[in-house]
Figure 1 (cartoon, rainbow, N blue to C red):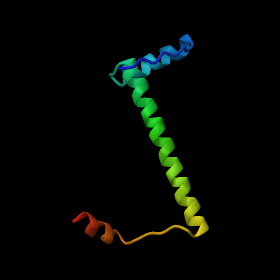
Figure 2: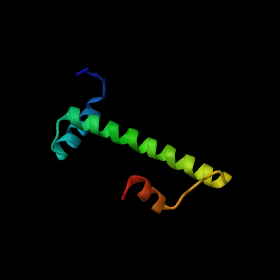
Figure 3: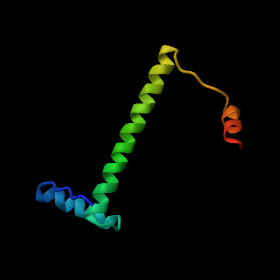
Figure 4: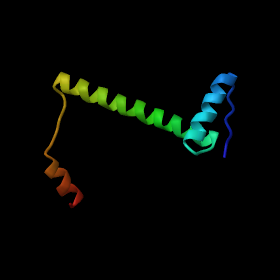
Length: 74
């Protein structure tokens, strides 16, 4: 597995370590999980902004949820 190194001030390192300890995980796991959550949040915000833009411009298309259930065989 590749390794990433980063330089942080001592105060930030203490905060990172405290966060990991509070969450009962390693520093590496805490940083990895936090970055993945940040990426997911940014992606969700982007999708929502696109949805809002389509809705505002009148280009948003929807369909009944029943159609989805039928498509999925539920």
